[in-house]
Image: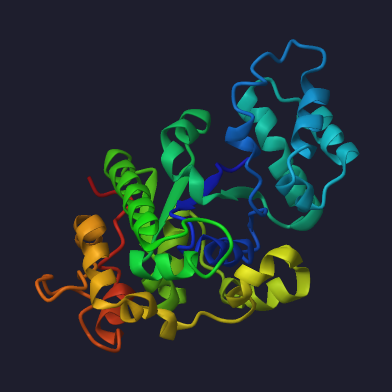
Length: 310
């Protein structure tokens, strides 16, 4: 069995887009968010308990998001019997394998997409020491605009700026601490040059690039990889990447709001290669008005940490 991988990052940073791109790879399978891996962590540490497996099946299906995986309790029970797990990491892997067999039978490796796990990467690496983690980063001002357009997440620019800065700073720190296990990829690079960035990600994962990854939107339309009731805030996944969306949030900020975001998240913006909105911000990769200069540099990989860098 191949080692798993995890897609993490601040919410509204493109993790669903990347999940679909990787799912379109014939070797890879990434279910919708499930929340059970860490949500149930610590509750199933005794495999000698005769109710261990049955309790887990019940707990898994008690989670609304997990019920969207298109699995049946019998399928999960059969998977446990077949794989015979003897630890929590092995037991927790069973639903991923069941999803893979059910929906991506040609695949041989599972992944997990959950933005919130960015704060729990050390635990993920304890559970799966050979796992690979992709930390996706997007300009915080675009993230804020996206958050404020949906019904969940922060309800003010101040809340959005603080949450983005906190999540991204945590991801940055984890990438520095675990350079061989964690790679940082920028949303802007992924959208501007999908093939180039996906080749880089595949290299990090130890997989060969497959052109099918670029057809993720067709696959999503055909298979409904994003649950229908969630498409309202993931409608862009039904089409190809749209580079024109880069920088919209920053451009839409008033002078006052731009100054507020700079004050709350400026250092994290700069640490990740983004220019502050104010006139005193240092020149950076995204300084061109139409965003094309930063797109070219993103495409050259200058904003993606090497998985082997120290």
